[in-house]
Image (cartoon, rainbow, N blue to C red):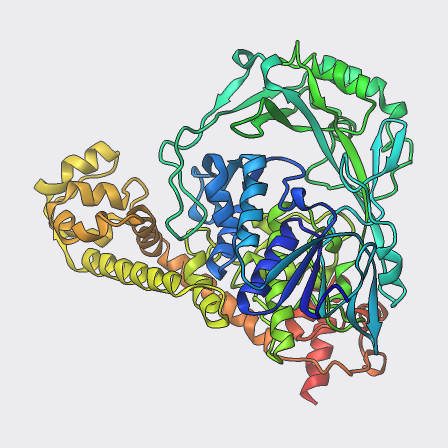
Length: 626
C-alpha cells in the first residue's frame, strides 16, 4: 500500500484545484492533490491576467475569506489597473496582468509549504464508490487511493479534444494529454454529463511586433493590489497595447470558414457567448468593420505576447495570413497557434449549494467541470468546495454564501439553481446587490466569516477591525466638524463646484461628486491633524476610499440592504427535501418538473429556477403555509 488514507483528494491542479487543496489542508484535513503534470500546477492556460469586471471582486472575496489567489497574483503581477473608474464604485474592478511562469511557480511554492498537503503526479482513471458515496480514486500508476471526500477540478481535460482547422486530436490543453476514463466512472453513478467548447488565441514573438503602430495601455500610476495583507508593491510595470482588426482581416478569415470546425459542425459543444472566437465575432456581428485586440505580455522573462480577442480554431495558415494584416503585426511570427477545445462538464443543477453532488455523497465538483469559464470563477468554487469537504468530514454545516453577501454566492446560486448551457462567466449585472458587493469592502463582508471557520488569520481580523475603527473615526469627524468659507472656497473653486457662504459641515461637502475625501483632508488643517495617524498607515488609501463610499452612498446602501433583507425572508422559508411536487395542486407542469429535478432548499432558490413563475411561487407559499 503506497498511500495512507486521506481526508480529501483533489483531482486536478488548476485554479480550482489549488484553492480546494490549500483551503482544506490549511483547515486541518490531510489532502492529496493529484495532477497529471506537477510543473503545470496553477498554470494560466489562457490569458495571463487575473481579475477584471466582476472577476476582480471575486478575487478580493477569495482573499477576504483567506484564500491564496490574491496573494499569488500580487506577488507575480506585472501591471495593475482599476477598471471602470469613470463609473460608480459598484462597478470598479481590479485587474492585474501576471507573469505566467512566475504565477505557476508561486502557486507551487505556496502548496508545498502547507503542512497537511501532499502532491502526486498521476492520472485518475475512475472513482471508488460504496453505498452511493465516493471513498477514493483509481489511478494509473498508484492504483487505489482512499479518502473521505473527493473534489473533481479537472478543467478541460475530461475527454478534451483540440481543434485547429480540419485537424482534430485528443488533448486537455495544447501539448498535454486528456483524461479519457474518469467521465465514464462518474456517469456510471447516474451523474449526467454534457460538452462545452472554449478557445484560445495565437501567441506572438514580441520581437516581431511593431508596437509603435498600436496604442499603449500603461498600468495605474499608483498600482493597487488584490490582497488585504501587505503584499509587495508593484514596480516597473509592463505595458499592454491596443490594436484593431479591419475589413481585410475579416475577408481573409471568412475565406477559411469552410475549414472551420465551428461552422463545419465538427464542434458540438456550446462556446462562450461573451468571449467568442474571432470567426464567431465576424459571423455574428457582420456589420462591424473592426474588433478590438489587446496585446498582453506573458511575463518579464519571455518575448511571448498574448493576442486577447483573436481566439480562433481556423487553420494555422489562415490565422497567420489574417494576423499579418493587423496594424503592428505585419512581420509577426506566431509562437503558438490559436485553437478550440471541447470537453466534458457535469451540469451543476446536480449539485448541492455546498458543491457536493446530490447523487453521490462526499463527491464535490469545482471549476470548469461545472460549466464555468475563467480562472476567478474556478478558484472561488475550489475554495468553497475545499472548505465544505473539510467541514463535512467533521460533521459541521457547509458554508453557503448568500447572493447579498458575495459574488461567489451569486455564482454558485446561479449554477445550482439555473444551471448553464454555455460557459458561465461572471458579470456585475448578474448581481442584484452590486452596491453592497463592491471590491473595496470584500473584507468587511467576508473576513469575519473566514476567521470564524478557521481560514482567515488573526492578522486579517485585526487589520479589518482597525480599518473599521478608522472609517468610523473619519465619518464621525466629518459629521461633527465644520469649515468656514475662507478655509475651503479656494479648494471648491479648483474642484469645479459651488463655493459656500457660511460655515458648513465636512459631511455635506463630501456628498458633492466633485469633492473627494483625500483632497478635503489635504486642504483642511483640522482634518489633516486629526487624521495624521491614519494617513501614515500602509493601507491609508484603502481606508479613505472605504469611508468616502460609505458616506457618499449611504442612502443607496441602506435601500439595497432593505431589499436584501426582503429577499432573505424568502431564503429563510425552507422546503422539505422529500416534498412531492406532483401532488401540489396549482403548479404548472414545467414547475413540477423543474422543482422535482433541482430540489431547491428554500423558496428564494425556487423562485430563481428558470420556468418557475411568480404564480408557482405563490402556490408553494400557500402549500407550505398549510
